[in-house]
Length: 521
Ligand code: ADP
Image 1 (spheres, rainbow, N blue to C red):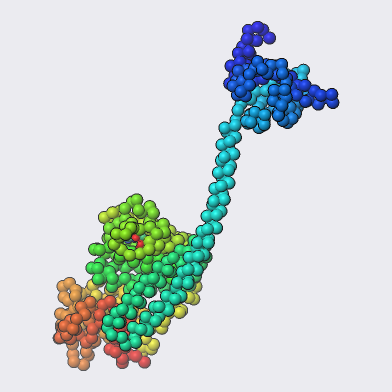
Image 2 (image 1 turned 45 degrees about the vertical axis):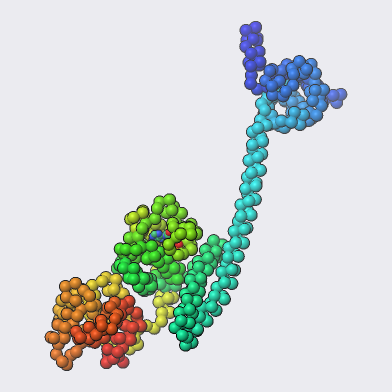
């Protein structure tokens, strides 16, 4: 090597940021390497080890650092004997630090070692491992605690529900036991509070069951229209009392029966519609359902529950489906509720392989989109266990004319008349009603009183004026005006009977039994 190159290599050695040392192995009597001597060291070596070059040169490692482990000497002996370079990471007990080392054979029992201090990296790796282990333990404990919590909630909910049933049942009996009106009012408050409490406990139980993975869905045939009718019937009065319109639409493509968990599906719809009614103070609520094609035995049923309520701010909408979250949470909130309903609804829908999302903005109302997957009807289940609401044995199916301008009321009426085994036709105002009676042969007319153009009173008056004495067609007023003078007005205009809105199936059945007695077997 020329002098110039020699100088360059020396600079490389001197300026290297890694510690560099040239060493000579020393052997014992048995030919085994037992120590090594420092021949040359660079400034980085001094910096990294904290040892002085002048104190090391010519001395052996065991003289300077007597606690040096034999493993280090063995590794260097291997380099010398094999003539191969090696790379390793090792902890030095003598220096109390970790090093990354590259060692090269230099022939004649000599070798070079180039090393860097990796103590900081090794510490953070080991700290990371420790943190990971701590986290794993914490997660494990949290999971165990969560299962215990769900178990506790499930047990508590059950334990609370059992005595509550007693409270409600007894309050029920108490109400019917001939109380003074004041006592009756008190007993009814007990009933109402009991039922509210059962609902809260039910929510907690549901959530606990879902979270612990113990919620199992039932499968039975669901009468979709009946389900819609039930949910509508449940809220139509409250909606009306708040001045809200409640629209319902069932797409004609929706099969009458599908197979799924009717109870849980109803629970989801009740929550969505209940919230829509609760939070909306003017405008309308809409419940619509449509169905997609049957794909490998799965039929998507898409529900849409929309309202013209206040809408939900974006920052809250993101947490809408989390348990216990309420947009107007806090002690000053105006509406009751636990903040569990939507969390449960979403989880139930997911159990049905479906999705539940909200489309909302402040001032723009809220629309919940819910898709669940149902199976085609099996021919068993809810449909077969329905209470026998049909009037047993018409001689022939009665033909009923429904005069009604409100689509939701039309819908309800249709469902009920189907249920009662009657044929029906619909018209939307008094003039159409007069024409229909002239043209058709109906057994009975269900007449709304307030309609545009010609109302129910005027239509009845004209129908009566044209009718012959022998063929008196029963005309039944169906109206939300329920005072005595309203009844009297109906009678004055020639109506035969009076049904109050919201119409119940029982009331309609009793009315048809009464007025169509000659058509019954
Ligand atoms: P709860 O109604 O029992 O408080 P939910 O989980 O059903 O619990 O609803 C959580 C919250 O989401 C409600 O408290 C309300 O702030 C908001 N919310 C739900 N539905 C509507 C809606 N249709 N319009 C406005 N806010 C709604």
